[in-house]
Amino acid sequence: MSNETEAVDERGKIIKEQEKMLKIRMQKIKHKVAVISGKGGVGKSTITVNLAIAFAINGYRVGILDADIHGPSIPKMLGLSGQRLEVGPPGIFPAIGPLGIRVVSMDFLLPDENTPIIWRGPLKMAAIRQFLSDIVWGELDLLLIDLPPGTGDEPLSVAQLLPEMDGVIIVTIPSEVSQIVVKKAVMFAKRLGLPVIGVIENMSGFICPKCGTKIDVFQSGGGKRISEEMGVPFLGSIPIDQRICESSDKGIPFIAEHKNSPASKALIEIIQKIEQFLSCRGKSKFSREGEGKI
Ligand code: ADP
Image (cartoon, rainbow, N blue to C red):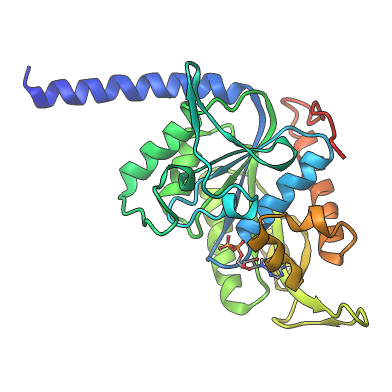
C-alpha cells in the first residue's frame, strides 16, 4: 500500500471516529437550531446572542456554536474576546459566558482578532465537524448555531452533520434586496429538509426614545410579507435601537441590560414562539432543566 493510500485510510478512520463522537455528544443536546441570513450585517449574531441570553434567563441550559468562521463576532458580544479553550481528557471545553452559556468560536483559536481565515470548503467542513465532535458541550437544552450569511459551505456542512436539527431561524431586514435573499435562504432550508422555524425582521423601524413614535427607516413589514408568500411562520419584528450597538461593543447583551425596551420585549415574544415550536417537535419536550439564574 502506498503512503498516499495509507494516509487516506487513516483520514477516513479519523472522520468515522469523529462522527461517532459527534453522535454521542449531540445526543446530550435536546434541541439544535441554526440562525441564518441571506446577507451579512442584518443582525444575525446580535439576535443569536440575545436569544441565547433570553433562553438562559428562562432557565434553559444554552450553548452557542459560532460557525461564522470568517467573521466570528459572538465572543465580542458576550464579553469573551481573547479567551482560550481549555483541553482535558474528555475533549475541548467551551468557554463559559454570561448565565453559564457555553460558547465555541473560531475566534478562540486565532492568535489575534485581525488574523483572517483563508480556507476552502472541505477544511471548513472539517472544522465544524471537530467543533461538534471534540467539544465537551455536556447536557444542553438548546444549541444555537450562528452560521455565516448566505448559502455556502458552512450551512451545508451543519445540515449534513446534524440531520436531526430542529430547524432554522432566518434573520432579515425590511429592505427590498434583503427580501430576495430571504427567499433564497428559505429555499435553501427547504431543499436541505430543514424546518423553517420562522423569519425575524430586524432593524424594523426606529422607536423614538423621547416620544415613542415609530419611524420606518427601511419600510418595515417586508419580513412578514415574505413569510406569508413563502408559507413560513413570521416570528416578529425587532426595532432599531442604538443601544443594541453599544451593548454589543461593550460585550454586555442588550436584553440583559435593557429588559423593558421595545426591542427586548419583541425578543421575548419571539422566544415564546420558538419555545412553542420546540415543544411541539415531539421527540423530547422542550423543558427547563437549568437553574434560572434571574
Ligand atoms: P450579522 O451577524 O448579520 O452580520 P451583526 O449581528 O454583527 O450582524 O450586526 C451588525 C451591526 O448591527 C452590529 O453593530 C449590531 O450591533 C447592529 N445591530 C443589530 N441589530 C440592531 C438593531 N435592532 N438596532 C440597532 N443596531 C443593531
